[in-house]
Image 1: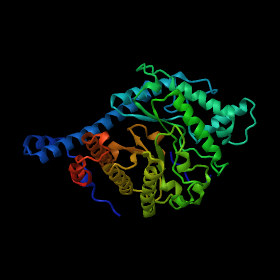
Image 2: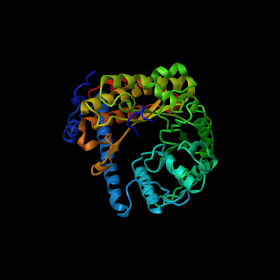
Image 3: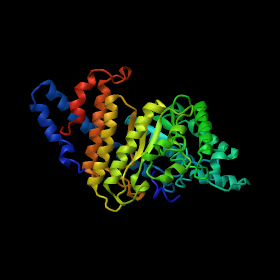
Image 4: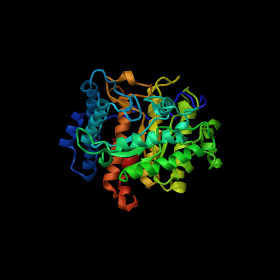
Length: 414
């Protein structure tokens, strides 16, 4: 999730190009369109895009209802551990069971983060508080990464979570295909050690440990993507000079045994300046492309841009800028998909159902209130779904099927 400031610790085409065809128009096309191969393909695309958006709305309704299904004294979000490293709130755990079971219905998969770098929901600072309460001599929140007792607290949490049996589906988390991957930590930083050695050792230990408990699921780190001391030639792509001093190292960290794919976040409004400008767009293009190149040439693994977004609270913000920002991100990832490249996907921070505005950190996108943004998201999903459905993974996307899709993948009109 974005932070306020890293330093502190081309106009897009008309919205009409992305507007979904209404249901009445789809029916008209279904009944009256000539039965040519091109016409039938276009009809199927319209139907698929409509179904994609309907699924998103339906899932939003289910998640909004979650609040009413939980006990009234339980917040929507809360740490599992409430009093000590081994004491868990079963009611909150059951809420997570419910969310996973609902996602399963809609064939949506999760990347579940195992701890937060930031204080939200407890984070690494909570582990340090528990350590101090147990009499440990701790001086910094970064002791989370190095103190053996705190490392064991984290491992115990991992073991409990991964071995939990869902009370609704009866599937153990480590056996549930609804969970796509485990994230070691959301946006880890270890600013007390700019060399990166302390965080590197933690990643090496924890990636292997998670795999020892659950060898079936993928594992990623949760990095923001800053280049560190192992690759000074890549400093030019960092948002500023401070980024190489926070103890992370994109290339080195991802060369660890047990890490399956790379993770990167995109928040130019947090890292460069809060005021919206075209500089943010140019940085984003360069940031994405450099990490795709590194994933292909240095790491030999896919890279997922696991968080990207823009805050409505930013000075100069407007929905047109947000749509331009999304479209640029999607276009680069679509190009990578088309070539069979290292761009493994991107995840918008963050989609909200109606009625959950109280949790909005400024980055929320409520689809029903943002039709142009909703159309862009839906179109990207439809394009990727269509591409993947027609091209076998075994062919490494080198088959001739992709040529038949080029018009669809890059033509703005539906």
